[in-house]
Length: 137
Image (cartoon, rainbow, N blue to C red; front, top):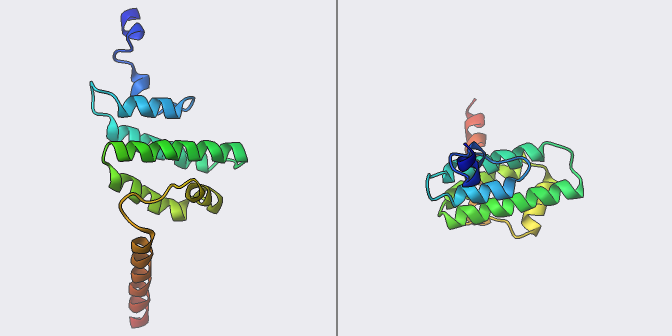
């Protein structure tokens, strides 16, 4: 067992996002060459950010959330998981506080493949379809 700890083999800590070191554990998971943990890393970091976003919001907490989101976006780019980021970022627009979303934008965090214009157009078309269905009743 000591050998496993020394060489960090079979360490369960490296298979999930650590609340005490989310960025470090995310990077370890993304760069793990023994096991494909990319999806688990991305999902884990998204969950971590979402859970932190529900807590008390002070300047330090928001800065931490933004740093985690930056790493998540970098990881999605390096692993060519563009849709993972774009879909999550689109959900963030309505599910996180306006303050966090604005912080993301001010730090240059935006869509990777989608454009804001495409997303806005899709939202408008969706709203139009909802209106059309409601008019029939």
